[in-house]
Picture 1 (cartoon, rainbow, N blue to C red):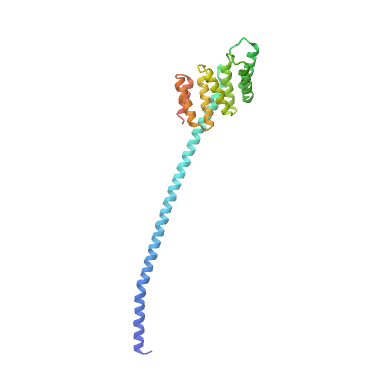
Picture 2: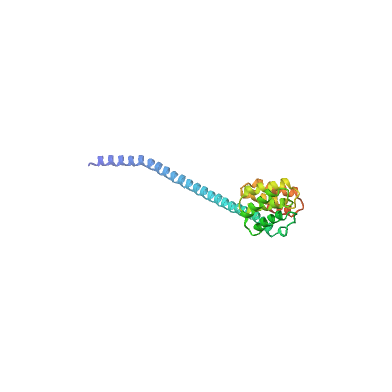
Length: 221
């Protein structure tokens, strides 16, 4: 190759290089921007993930707390039945004139005391059916409703105790009957109904131990 041709070749190669450099620089800039954008997206994804994880943890904590409250509320209904069993007022019952009537009531109540709730609920229901005008009928209805609650027949418990309250609203056990109803409603996931029943207990039977218990339970909601 002559000197002239070599000079021309060098000039052309230099020209090509000068033309290629801006294109390479542009591609590098685009790649750099893409990397920066990807990093930004990854950072945002991490932030979103962390935020979601925090929210999930908070929800789990709230759920555990709610479960604890519901468990506490559920336990108080069972406590009500146990207190009824231990209460002195289910000791020697009021005596009635008919010996057969008295024996039927005492036998049914003995089943309740023994914790045989399925049998006691049936026996007490039979008693009120056989002796609807008995002075022992309100107590029989109360212990039948309590037996049904303890046997997890919550609908039956509510029905029986509402019958008692409708017929004997002034009975000494009326406030306690409302407490058992509130416990049954809670077991049936009727939280609003349970709260309303507790509020009713406070309103209709103020100054009674049942009203005090209702206030304590409302504080758990």
